[in-house]
Image (cartoon, rainbow, N blue to C red; front, side, top):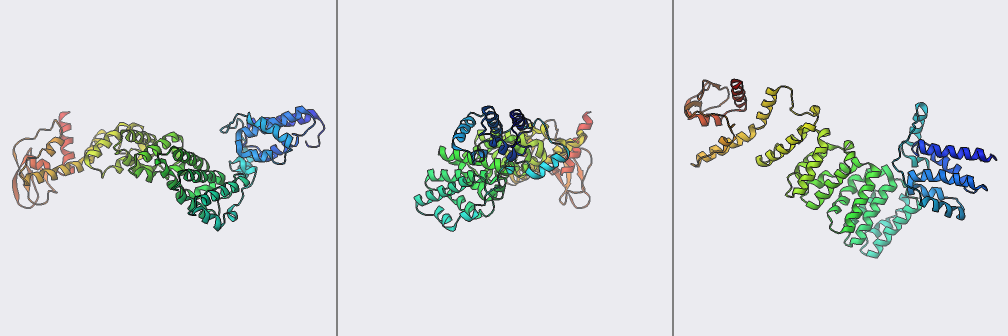
Length: 466
């Protein structure tokens, strides 16, 4: 193509490159080759050829954005560069453009092996900046002088710019550990700059920043509770950059401990961010968010409880109903009943295979519901006995009995020993295998029912009604 003198032939080739960029997108074409070909004709004597060459570059630029601009403008004459910059400034971004045509067979396999889904991998290699992050630079970041810290931050910004914001993630542990402490900088303006620097480093490292997620993400996200607008805004931008580079699931998986903190501002911002990016929740370790969400659902703020409930609704299809039920079983009875009611309201969206006790047999389902309430009944029995010893009447158990249950006021017989192995003999009496027997009220007899007795009695009553 470079040696061709046919204007129509050159135009056809450049037109084909535009078509490839539009139909296959930057994800599936050799970007470096396409750009080199287009840049070759930016200085062609024919104005039509130059115009078509600019269209090729504009098509690539619209999909890859500012990250590709330094490579587009490299080794281009000043006059041509000004024209190109003017054209690119009017280009409408299309970063999420999906291919209309896809590669097949061996072509697809070869391309996946070369690019691995990142079109920028074919444009430029990443720069190793570890040798430039000297011990003196690290010391300057922690200096007691604010001006020295500011100068160190600016030096790192310059290193990133010289590397075209594409760096290797290796050898930067000392830098990231130091920046972790600077995000709580006493000077708020400088703290904001350091938070922005962390976001820029994550974007420059790309997927490699994932190795620093546990180190840096949570300390950075704690700044969401800061009431200063600048800090709050810059933190959200940095989190978004980290999510784009490492994957949203990496951010989700580090948000659990933040929700467990009794901090209204922090909980509100974290829950809002999760809901804003809920389309990526299917990739996250949703199980790690179950317990923190239960904590948030007990918050004093109605707004936070509402946000937590919305997140629970998003997670139920993947986590399942039973995961949340298991996480609330040790809570206080009043709180437990409140959360059970809330979960029951959304139970229908949870999959049946999620491990819940849902079953097609209504009798089995009834048994499961009754057994889940046995612990509360046992607690009520203990309260009743304690009140009896103190000489006070207790109505705790009576309130928990079914409304249609009739308790005959007749005496029964119960063992003073173990209640196990007991069997009913008529209504209001019980005989125990072995041991002495004492007369007790039927209410007392009912209060000491085991879980199995309770299930059997209620099922029998239901059968008699039918």
